[in-house]
Length: 86
Image (cartoon, rainbow, N blue to C red; front, side):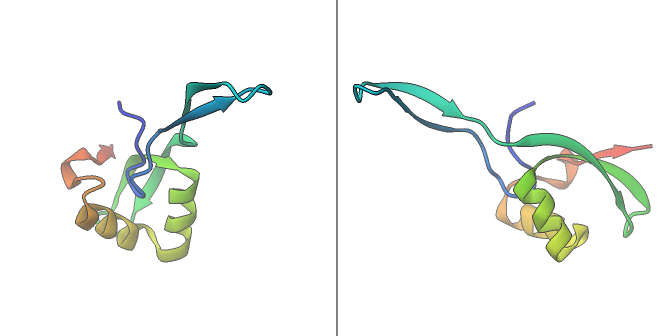
C-alpha cells in the first residue's frame, strides 16, 4: 500500500540532509500516516482509512462524510478504494 493519505492526498517529500559543512545529500520526509477505523453513519458500516494526522484533524473539523466527498472530488481516493470492515 502506498504511503498517501486518503483524505488530504499528502505523500512523502524529497529534500536534503544538510551537514555542518553545508554538504547536501538526498533524504525523504515521510508522512505521519496510520490506519484508522471510522464508523460511517450514512452507510451504517465501519470503514478503514489510511490517514495522516492532518487528515484526522480535517475529519474532526468537517465530519467524515464531507471529508470523504471532498477527497473523492479532488481525486485523492475513490469510493472503491475505501475498505469496508464487516
